[in-house]
Amino acid sequence: QAPLAESGGGLVQAGGSLRLSCVVSGSLFRMNTIAWFRQTPGKQREVVARVSSDGATDYAGSGKDRFIISRDNTKNTVFLQMTSLKPEDSAVYYCNTSPFSLRINGRDYWGQGTQVTVSS
Image 1 (tube, rainbow, N blue to C red):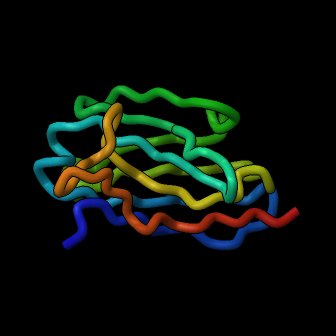
Image 2: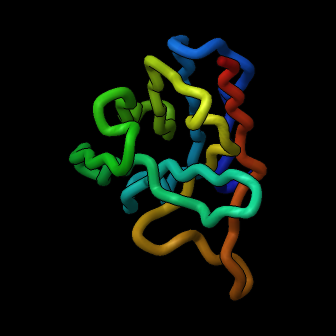
């Protein structure tokens, strides 16, 4: 089982909503802040939102008033509820531990991500 697994992306019209899910392996989930990131071609990956192990949240960028991050401790899952989506939200969305990404065998580990495409 992958330590991080994102899902829930898709194609949606501007103004629509999506809920992304990130299933995290047990020990990673319990002990770490988990963040959602996004990346578009040619740009650096950027943080979207974070939720700490005790549930504290913070947001970055334009998603601050439109996205909600949460965690379900019974399912080892972190969610990102996105509303009022805009074309500029289109990106591949990833989850990872924060502030330092997961490292496996000496290398940063990133899952496959989930593609979000917002049409105008």
